[in-house]
Image (cartoon, rainbow over all chains, first blue to last red; front, side):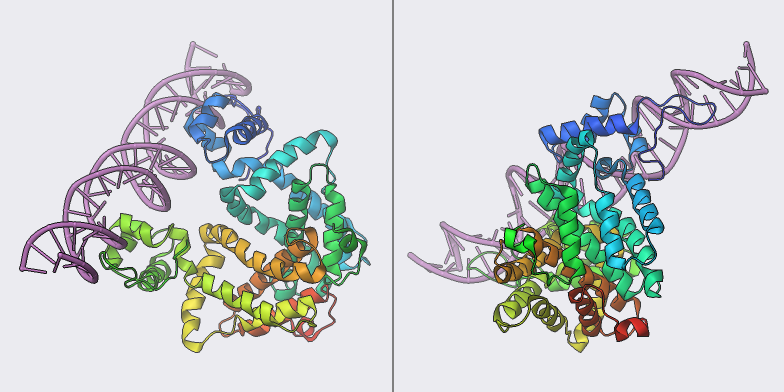
Length: 211
Length: 211
DNA sequence: TTCCAATCGGCACCGGGTGTCATTAGCTTC
DNA sequence: GAAGCTAATGACACCCGGTGCCGATTGGAA
């Protein structure tokens, strides 16, 4: 997990060159997954398609489930920085909303890959389950931000509840984005997180419009 | 999955008696898990301890991960009924809070088993991940309740966000309960769900007390 | 050229999960 | 009480994901 998403072409001095990169392997895998289905694609097939042995595959990714999480660590770091640098006077829930929305503005050419990734993560049961283990870190970022502002430990009830709730509504927004062909992810996240911050008592446009 | 948690001693006419019940098997398994650890306990050992073959074990539970979910379907049904029967004028988030709190009042002699169950589900990574697949049904109950009151489809953004958020804070409350020896689960759920309904803007006792 | 370092490949092995099929145990009917 | 139906059981063979181990390869550096 330490080096997942790392560049990899050549690092330290000495040693053999790596036969491919995490990113290449990820793209090969995502293509096979979307074409034949996740479960139906075996690790042997992935390794074959990537021109490596099965054993070597597991040196690139700790498990088949981890392939779809390419740049996740980088995204986490972005979110963490955004929250660290936001205005001190900003209410906690506003800060979280703005940070999450900002960190989900994707570049145009990344969108197709991101849709593939999210389609897998949100719809394949095995990945849906595995995602939970990754979300732990995401929640930690939120809780670590909220806790000092509330004057409470990060592992206490309210910061944890905020982290869980924020994650939940963010996932719900992602699902809506995925379900609609040309939906606007940041806009959906903004609505969802505003609802959350209001305790779902917004007599808002969103509800009238059926968003 | 259809019959998990079912009674099972003898059902239809004809045929052989089942060698044990789901509940017995669950208790045997929970004991072994808490004694030797979840990962370290193989299905072969479970089957042996329960006096059945490995193959038969998988006729009682679809997977090792499902053992800890004994009465979950019944709990879901309880929650569903509670929400169906609650006062029509009650605000959505209040109804959800009251229902969840009510459905988590445990009988004294069930608490030790429930703590074992939840310790596994919330702390063993494999089960933490698997739980996600069970939570889908829980969220569905919430979304199905909230949707008509908001005049929206159950699969639209706000009902889904509410369901995800409610689930999240409920899990956070369960974690606090598990972490403290003699904590009061309904009380923690009540606090967490009140916070949620207020958008985490409560200047409340909970925060001052550090709950 | 030699040495070192890191990757790669192959192999054996483990554990969860499934399909198949013969066997067993019980109830019902004659 | 024997035949017949039904359903659960047990044994076996597989598949697949994942890991430990070790020798073989491929490069840079001394």
